[in-house]
Image (cartoon, rainbow, N blue to C red; front, side, top):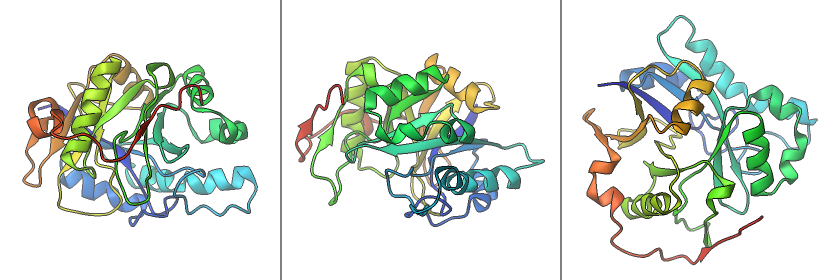
Length: 256
């Protein structure tokens, strides 16, 4: 069947919308058949709960604490906990994989970077930058922002928190760019709804393994149904074939 990994997960240590402590996800995700998780809390330019009035490095320590608590809880278990970041620009968001807490501490200037500049910096560090839920529509959003392939390394084409048509539009968008694709639950709290993840033939033992697997297109984006059924997203028509256009205007902030 392969090895299943959650790629988009929020803790209450750093994400204002998170409802679960990092350490409390381990048994929960193991019981659902996952072999590992990537903690991707909202960064300081997103829906963070990290105080703004602290020195940069102290803020980064707090930011990484959800991941570190999960990592500690997984010690001695056959379960991989990895570090990631979800950054926000103008309400368009990106998942960063392959950097660590120390890299962030050394790059306070990342807060002032454009999308392309951040992408270049992440690539130089050996990581990747994936556009998260590109066609998401919510009451707090006024538009949809899409970027060229030169600004990202892949697209999240299945987000379990999105409606099917939003994911289908993302799938179509990714095909047009010709980039790797990912899937994740975007989980903030315990639930019995559909979940997402990436399925691999071999175990992913580190975030470096994950980055290389995505670059080589060796993973399969999947949906995990409440009954435990794992289905490749490519086999789910409503998640891959759009039935309507987005209702929000689509913008292309190229070069920003």
